[in-house]
Length: 116
Image (cartoon, rainbow, N blue to C red):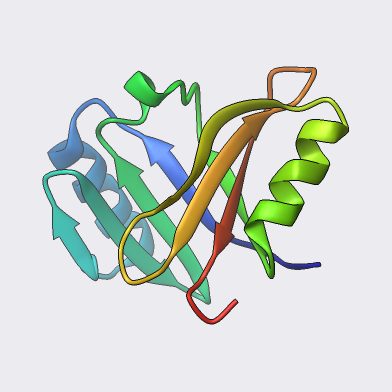
């Protein structure tokens, strides 16, 4: 079961330029501002900027589906023909992420918060 797409991550080459663009777009400062990730919140949506995204195989923005059980969901997607890009791992605070690529090359992210 999902709670929808509540997070989107953009791979960026110039973190400062991207941060300025999203600050202008969203009209707010980032809630997280680190050399490895900048995150904004707007209207219930998390928008992240990842300067290492291209190296991870991200070819454009990746929507992250918030799921109750990331391991079960990942296994179901792999069984349905998806290709694993990033196995389940903790990005801090118990938040787990993973990503796959579908048969058309679209990237699909999965996210499970510590509370499920």
